[in-house]
Image (cartoon, helix red, strand yellow):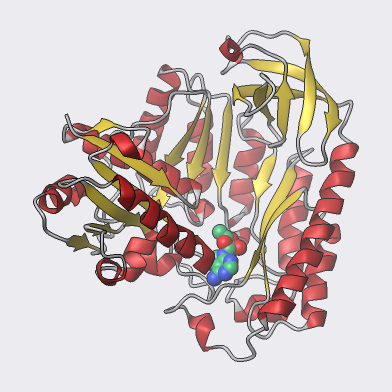
Length: 436
Ligand code: 5AD
């Protein structure tokens, strides 16, 4: 039996796509390898969102090709494969295979050709493709990603994703519910619904509000998360569904990108700072205790010091619990590369440092205030160090617990006993069983 190794970079959807590829290739007779040295096929599932993500992959390809024996296949899949296409075969001489996110159905055939010495690529878009008939092969555990929407119809001027993942399409609600029910039957109790603008989900009949209610009603599903929503798609219907669905967790990741209206306009984000803050207020009013995280880009073309300071002031005003912060990276083929007034790298780097400091200070302050609180924690997996287990609150805080590995999948009421500023230590207060 041939063995396939997949290394995954980038977003949660790439993690889910790698699980899909294990499913596709498992069906074609491939076993999974956890070590590239043992694999006949090595695939790197890539991200194209920023240049440094791509540079890391180029470097990694150099390392992986050392494991390549005659007849072995080294492939690049995912968004960077889609973006660069066959040019990647020129650029990295020992790569045999380049396959984009809509072409995974052909992966086994293409691997066969590559194994026979051909250098192959498939980067065609197939806007009907959901891989509906392909059961993903997941790491067993209490949590799972479920892709509900692929592609993106927004055109944020900085973003490469519409050009790497193609047009937006939603799976049918009944198909999503069936998959979630199967997951629940095999012991998963938390699902994260994935889509590029997940709350614009619409299958022709049902919208995201319907989806939340339906997934939340699946027996055995105790937690529902979703990522990433688009601010203006939080309609009253969606917020009401969140409110009415007990399983929906009290955490929303809500990318804002900038606190300046002028920058938001140049980014073609379809809201103002004020409209964003109204969405935040709506979520806070409907879902008591909800935590908020966000994505922010600094150094977007034309961003002035004053505009950057509007982003800084938004951290306190929106009172974010956490933020993923990025320096703008020009992506060839996106509209923003044609904008003038590129911000010098040193200026952008300095803004990033200042932003990170403000984000951290806000998170530290908020988290220090949470010590002593009691939260429901789902025990996920062993922590990297100290023989502890890692769990997560509904509000998406990580908690280290002194529990045995057999506790994975259990829900416990835990007191937060301390914080590093970002993660917590905790102690079980009333042991509860994972019986629903
Ligand atoms: N440069 C920097 N950050 C980017 N992101 C998307 N495109 C770019 C880019 N060209 C960030 C956004 C998005 C997150 C996934 O990555 O903040 O929400």
